[in-house]
Structure formats: structure tokens, C-alpha cells
Image 1 (cartoon, rainbow over the protein chains, first blue to last red):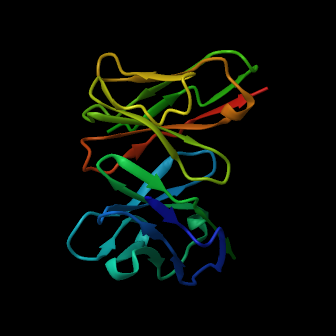
Image 2: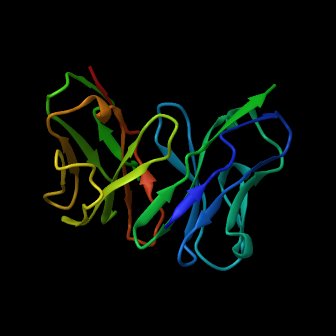
Length: 111
Length: 113
């Protein structure tokens, strides 16, 4: 069955530190991969997407993600976190309009 | 690009009442999607439209849920005879086609008293 797993429910990092959020998926074929961010009471904003090609993709706000087929992973990274990055982050996988989201990782940024 | 617009932002109603939410997608987007998001979870897909055609509705949560997109522009999601368990955020998204990323609205938060 198709599924998306975000192993970390909550992560706390200090401002200026690096960040990696994990995402693993189980799918019958290589799906499209996405990372979205959600601030409280708001909808989801697309950070980046992977459809094909270069497995390292760049997104908005200084985020990047790397697709590793052998590990069925699509981890999100940022070299230096800003206080405004505090939010909920969702990994999503989709194929043929079947979009599945992980349960999310809540990021707290310490000053 | 004015973004996806949802109305109302918040809806409080008594159990057993019917509610209807509206979604206005980005104007050139053919695809429109509805999701439900409960606290601490990611969005859960409910249904989607290609223009005015509803192409997937088997994942609507029960027969109390229905959606329309009569002219291929805005869409409505109706919940009849609301129950406590319907309390959630209802999100709408749109995309140009099935291979493009979905753009989300800010959602309608439903609270059932």
C-alpha cells in the first residue's frame, strides 16, 4: 500500500543551525515528490518538487531536498535555519492524482 | 495569480446541521482538489475535479459528503447532518493539470458544537 512516513514528529534546532527533515515513502512506482510548509491557521505552501532528472532539487526560502531511490527517501535540508522557518512541514508523494501526505514534522527554532 | 480562495475561513455549527464551503481556484487551473486535515495530521484526499467532471469520489468520507463544480470554476463541498467527528480543517487546492503541483488555499476550519 502507498504510504508516506515522516519519522520525526517534532524537531527543535537553534537559529543558524542546519536542518534535515526525513521523509520515506512506499509506492509501487517512482512517484512525484513534494515538500510543503504550513504555518498555523494557514494552507500549505509548496517548497519544492521532484518529478524527474537531477535528484537534488532546490526550492524556495533556501531549502533543498535529495531524492534517493535506493532508500525511498526524499529528505529536506537547509544549511542555516531562520526563526521564520518555524512551522509544520509535510512531505507528499503523488502519482496520477493520488496525493498522499505524511503526518508532518513540527519545527521549533530556538533563538 | 490571486491564489486559491476559500470561504468561510471558520464555520461553527451545531451537530446535525448542514454546511457548505466554497473554493475559488486559481483561474487558469483545470484541476481542483478537496482535502480534510485533522489536528496533528497531514491532509487527507477527499475528491477532485477536472474542469466540471468529478473524477474521483470514492474517498469521500461518507455519503453525507458531496462536492460540485458546476461550471468548472468554483467548487462547493457540502456536509449534511454534521457530526462531532467532522470537526477539521477543509482544504482546497488547484493545479493546471494532474502533473503539476497543487496550490492550496488557507482552508475552512469547521467546529461542530
